Image (cartoon, rainbow, N blue to C red; front, side, top):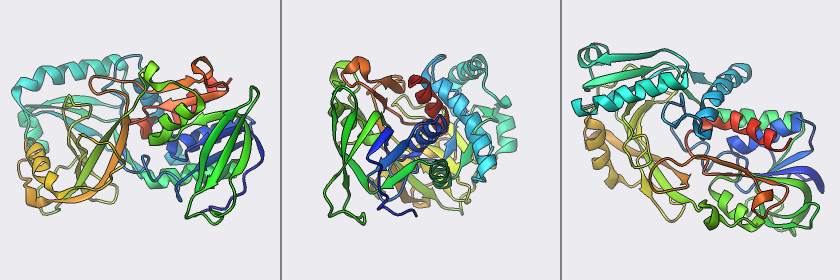
Length: 384
């Protein structure tokens, strides 16, 4: 792990706030374009809050509307992510995934998803199979009909974060961990930012460092709305007030008959999530999750009492699963920008919103991991 005592340059072209997958990708691409860049991250490790608290799924981009940022950046991001993993030796696999119409009444929705994926030009084979064919291939699953999407896969999110951090530092980006941006002031020409070393940093007792940056890139994840508000953006006016949604995961006992394909999804649940699905990680562990639980705080505890509801949900399509087969694993929190319906990523210059010389990334939830490299390219475009 790099030292948390990294000294920041006093003057920078660009300061990136947040060292998750998106922040690190942005920093690297901006550095490659010739800027002096630093990333500050208040946690002691990069990518520990949102980037690594998910399923590690490489999404195919099949669920969002045509023309949306989520769809476009997910499809392009998946292509870039697979190429990055090949180049830097990040563990990954193109596994494909099943999406199931569990009951006959869901078949029209599955048919619409099939047509939508083809309209988007989704890569990889797409195959629709009957209940009988699914039972032959996947005896542990039950559904009226199924779609197979070959472009989906898995990535080791922790290894991906570390590869991004290493490449950022190799290109000359300063990555300061245990360093929190606590005050942002624009003087009409540049940003002046106080950097406070967090309690676990080696230099936590020193006065705040003061950094001057021509541009701020706000990739702070769950804290991005706070950074945006402090920079001068009226979040409520623009409809960018976040809704925190917790997603819990449970491990599934290996004693239960489980599918051959390591990604199995029901149709989207309509509550802002993709439904409680099954994932076999690259390490061979099976997970069920995430669910959708509105929260007010950053509560990452997984409550065992939710296991019964998880089992009921998953047993619709994997009938062998019972509550006793599930054990609490971990949870993540997504920064959603609305309570119902589709809400796109927000990637915006702050100049038109009271925050000059800044770019803000809000509502970067799933498929943010998949889209991260394409998001970074979009940020570069916004700044050129």
